Amino acid sequence: MILAIESSCDDSAIALIDIQTLNIVYEAKTSQNEAHKPFGGVVPELAARLHAENLPKLLTGVKPYLSNVKAIAVVNEPGLTVALAEGVIMAQSLSIALKLPVLPIHHIKGHLYSLFLQKPTDFPLSAAMVSGGHTLLIEAQDYSRVRQTAISLDDALGEAFDKAAKMLNLDYPNGSALEAAALLGDENRFGFPLPLKNDPKLAFSFSGLKNSLRLAIESLNAIDAQTAADMAASFQKAAIAHLLDKTRSYMRRARPKKMGLIGGASANKTLRKRFAAACQEFDCAPLFAPIEYCGDNAAMIARAAIEAYERGLFCDPSKIQIRSRAPLL
Ligand code: KG4
Ligand code: ZN
Image (cartoon, rainbow, N blue to C red; front, side, top):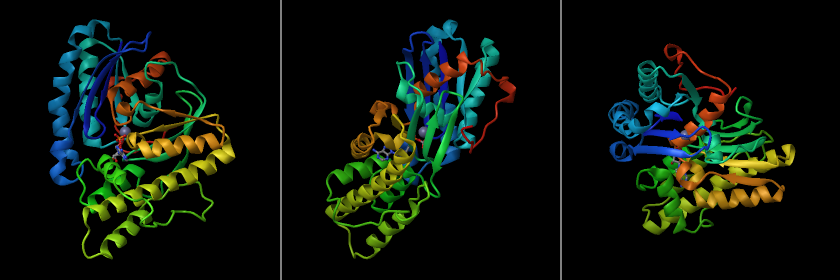
């Protein structure tokens, strides 16, 4: 089995996966949402302190299986440095105490393998990664050959959802609250402009859209619940339209046969539906992770780590590099 640790942002998570059967043998996660709620966003130092408290508690469930563990996988990049460090320290301690090798795992590769939980991989494929920290188009040949073909020039999609929800005084965590509000709203009431519409660049930008929402809010004296819902729905419509506008440009050019949608914001049901429809226009098969594995979790890290294990990509525990930003290749 591989024991995986995820602590790149505000979720402390541990999972055990069977290398041969791909079964998730154990998984546990502690969300820190309530702790960060009063601040309206993730506070890095608080996240780190809570990882230090939570990870050892989650680890107790692994005890019965420890003799079967062959390697310790840990996310070392990208993410909040102080948060990543807590997982890495735990991986180093376990590696030394149990004499097990360490597999450092790139967080985005983890999300990619959320498409292949409890099943074999299906490469090559392309994917749109939409999370709080990233909005990317990626192409993957196999575990070691994953490259990005488009990035966001400013905010990530999830980050834009978070900020929009905050502006509309919606509940925390914001992305899912914005989706919930949008369900009750009229997405055609406010016409927000499509970012980079006449720009041939294959890139994303969400900061202009965020600004359009701010101006719409400021133009009204008061925002009742229905108006907030209409704004949420109109904002969501524009953000998804932008993501899919550029994803379509990519599919038109690259003609991928399979396209995954990964990252925390891929839990958004309207996005999933429209993404699937866009893929079908190009005879491309859409791939999704189960909704409960879209956000950060350790099972996807463990799944990615099986590939790293089979390639022998072990690291001396004293040499694990922690990086807040890290390219895929
Ligand atoms: O992958 P993830 O858990 O953490 C990062 O690696 O960033 O993604 C978290 C992001 C947050 O910005 C959150 O607001 C967004 O995913 N998110 C959503 C939804 N659920 C989570 N965005 C839109 N709609 C959702 N239902
Ligand atoms: Zn993530």
